[in-house]
Amino acid sequence: MKRLCSFLIIIGILPALTGCALFPSKLHGVERLLVVQAMGVDAADGAVRLSMVSTADSSRGEGPVRLSGSGATIRDAADDIISRTTEEELLCAHTGQILLGEERARGGIDGVLRYVCRSREIRMDVPLLIVRGDSAERALLDTGDERIGAAEILESLRAAAPARDGFSPPSVARIAGQLEESGCALTAAVKVTAASERSEDGAPLTLAPAGCAVIRDGALAGFIEQEDVAALDLLGGARGVHDFVVTDAEGQRVTLQTAPGRADVVPLRGETGELRGAEIAVALSASVAEIDGRGALSSGEYADALSALLEREILRRAGNLVQLEKTLGADFLGLGERIALRSSARERALDEESGVNFASLPLRLSVSVSISHSNDVRDG
Image (cartoon, rainbow, N blue to C red; front, side, top):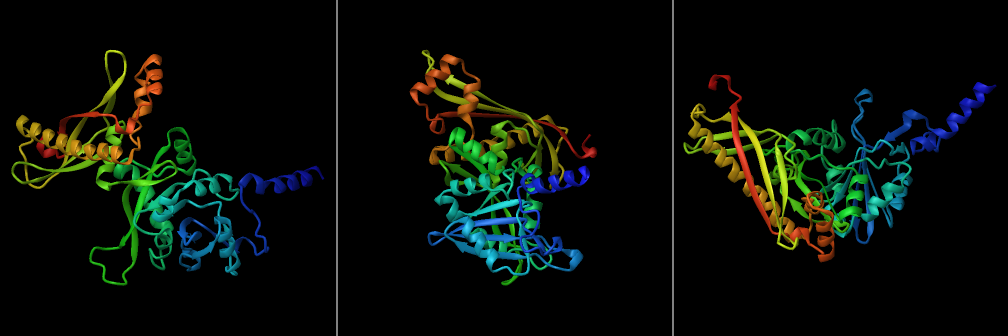
């Protein structure tokens, strides 16, 4: 009897622990559940357009299920989907990605953040991404084919992100926390594109990285270009490994791979302690990963020339980021926090009293690169 009571108590509290409806409301059984893997939110004439997609079920020979609905709120849009979905029960506890269309993101993301944070069905650690130049509905419903859908594509992009550009899509909880602390946050952006450059009209569409989205004061302010995302990591701490392509004096394309280094922020202050600017000094090493030809890697002059080319390329991309910070008025490089860590209590109080705008703070950039080796054993 005690075992039976214990079992009933555990079953009773499971829905509260999992944050979702463990048992279908229509008692269809587990095999009738549709597990939502990705969700999208768009603005639609003052209403909300909600999209959902599942992964393909190869064991049952079924492709991805794609759904959409509208309503005055996200909850209303979800109810609209449920009311028109008679074959399946929806389970949102395993949602792995949430997408916002660009129009919705520019209008504000606070409503979506609040919905997820209050939801019993969706986890707060789910990544949130922005669809650049398009709607989340198109990104979820029109990409992929009958074998794979947007959920699989997004998962492959997420898994490759750290190695590709050192930036992983942050969670809803992290974005909400950053906006609360500093009023600024970054998240990943994706775009709808042809599955192949040679695709003809009607060929499958896919999703591709589209840089980073800058969120300021709860709304999308702009985008960091994809090629500049690596510089974002270098200025932020140089913790990742990145590939840069330069052209040497002989016209050969050389791929240089950077190793984790360091990026120090040094406050520049006047005689009375007032903050006049800052310097970001990046120091790292790199190796030659690929070369179209055969460079004289044993020559110190050639290695120095490659170092200079890489330094100029990093400075160019870093300069793009600094200019974007000033244009958007968003301190997405986190200068305020990093300068505070290098300042005394008196200096921090002085910065707060003077109301320093860190996004418009004059910045001095310096990059030092040393070519450590070639990855080709023949160059030894």
